[in-house]
Figure 1 (tube, rainbow, N blue to C red):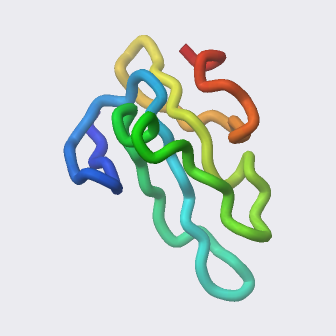
Figure 2: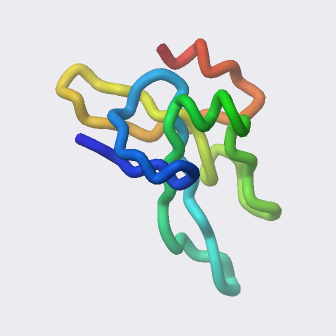
Figure 3: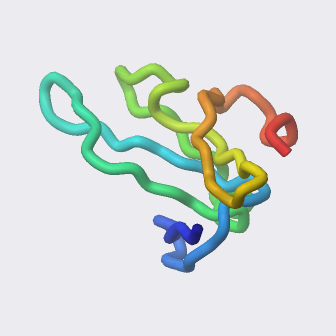
Length: 86
């Protein structure tokens, strides 16, 4: 399963410190789209921050890789270390 990085545009596999973010829009806020950034962009630009007014655990987190190669979004907050999810 390959995902496209929102920052650099490259395709990548969910591994390392890759992150996801749900973008909310409208009023009341509703999910609009989900974006991803690769491990290299997380190290270069830093982790995603939660959108104002949205709970961090519902807004963004680190990707967790399962044995089958599928990716699962974790309910991780930014305050947690990405090393906990390897």
